[in-house]
Image (tube, rainbow, N blue to C red; front, side, top):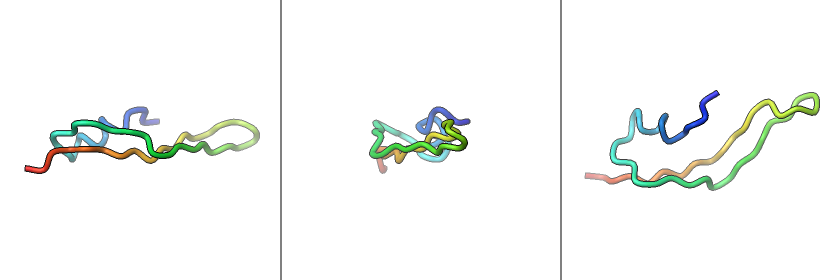
Length: 47
């Protein structure tokens, strides 16, 4: 499971200056959380 969306985004986006979680949710199976999901907004510099 990838715990750091900023690290993944930085593989293809340079000069990231900030990030914030716009929304979050979880998937549940048999009464247990199986996945965490977030909508992550990333701010970066365009040169």
